[in-house]
Length: 130
Image (cartoon, rainbow, N blue to C red; front, side, top):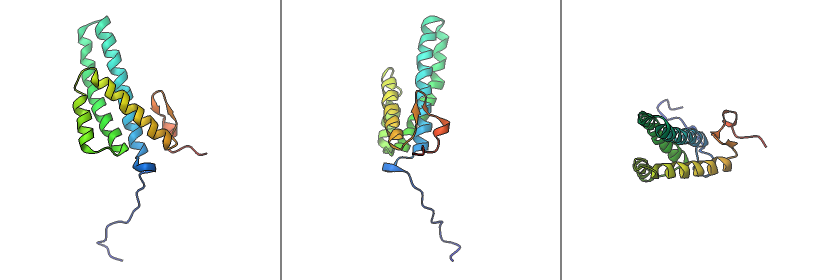
C-alpha cells in the first residue's frame, strides 16, 4: 500500500452528469431571487422608491443561484458567465431566472426528485424510493 497514492473514491454525478443537490440549491436561490424581485417591484410601485434596495440582495442571490444551478447541470464556464452578464440587464434577468429554473426542474425530475413551487423540498434531498 502506497501512502502517497491519491484516494480512489468514485464520485457519481448522477444521471447525465447532473449534480442534483447542487442544482436543487441553485434552483432554490433562483426562485427566491425571482420572488424578491417581484416583491421589490411591487413595493417600489406602492410604497416608496427606497424599496429598490431589495433588488441588490435579490441580484446576489440570483447570481449565486445561476452559477450553482449551471455548475450542477454541467454547463460550461462561458455559458455561466454569459448568463451572469445577462443578469445585469433589466427584465432580461427575469427571463434568465425563469429559463434556469425550468431547466433545473427538468433535470431534478429526471433525477427522480420531487420538485414543488419553491424548488426541491428538504425531504427530497435524497432521491425518492420507487
